[in-house]
Amino acid sequence: MTKKSEKRDDKPAKRKAAKIPNAIYEAELFRLQTELVKLQEWVKLNGERVVVIFEGRDAAGKGGAIKRVTDYLSPRVARIAALPAPTEREKTQWYYQRYVQHLPAAGEIVLFDRSWYNRAGVERVMGFCTPEELARFMRETPIFEQMLINDGIHLRKYWFSVSDEEQLKRFRSRLDDPVRRWKLSPMDLESINRWEEYSRAKDDMFVHTDVPISPWYVVESDIKKHARINMISHLLSTIPYADVPHDKVELPTRPTGSGNYRRPPRELNKYVPDHVAELAGDPERDL
Image 1 (cartoon, rainbow, N blue to C red):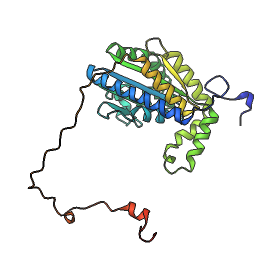
Image 2 (cartoon, rainbow, N blue to C red; image 1 turned 135 degrees about the vertical axis):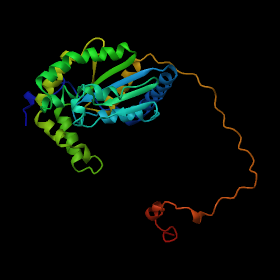
Image 3 (cartoon, rainbow, N blue to C red; image 1 turned 90 degrees about the vertical axis):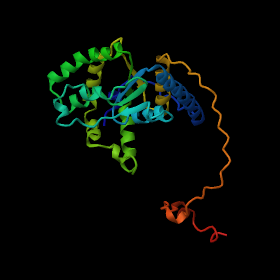
């Protein structure tokens, strides 16, 4: 355990904010998600391209933020790129190549759940890249991103910053959670032992890639709900989208049936078993 005076953190110590009430959170989140739908329609109409990068430590809240961004968006417009470890073939490619193929075409939004910045983080700390490859990445990434921006892509980069105490708390909560246990990979557990190495790697990454044309935006994420609201609000504030007018939609009147259609007997179909009935029990028995 570290002493309080040696507390490791991604950010300066400060008084912890009180959590936003659930009712306010839900109302503001829905308002922001309504604006995200407007952004989506603007992107579609104008053929815009948006790339949002989500980076940060394991259990920093990236996945939850991405889920809230995409809740009401069309998967045909907004998609998530969460790439697995590179194959042996991909390891021989130009480093950015496997990410480039996931970039958006006109009218699309792509959210990178981790990105080419793997090289500056996990690859560096775990020794998966050489010092020469890392140095080249630091030099070339601002140039690569400037090329994307010059071509008209709206690029936003978010770093989710979580304290070591909160990260450890989230890891522990996953240990016995049957639906989240899969999130605890050996790499996640190793990150606990390499906290300071990851901190130095992140600081060095910012020195080289936090540039005026493509800055990093840090999201305080010890309180997940605050992080989601703050990140979405900021994203919307940085893109000059406008409300797209829509023609009023009216449902047509259902035509009168011809009287010649007969539904096939139910016995001809295979129905899903009524599992709900098993849960509810026999209503007559409960009378």
